[in-house]
Image (cartoon, rainbow, N blue to C red):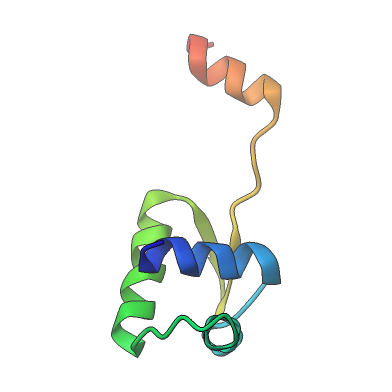
Length: 76
C-alpha cells in the first residue's frame, strides 16, 4: 500500500483524527512515514475528495445517498 492508502486506512479506522493520532496508528502498524509524506498524503486525499477536514481533524468523506448518486449519474 502506498502512503495515501495507509493514511486513508488510518483515518477510516480512527474516525475523526488529527495528524498526531494518524502518526501513532501508522507507527503501531509498523508503517513509517516522514512528516512530509504524511502532509503530502493528506493534501492529496483532500484534493481527491476522499477525506474532509474540520479544523485540525480529518475523516473519510461520508458516502452519498443512492438518490444523489442517481441524480449525478443522469444529470437531474
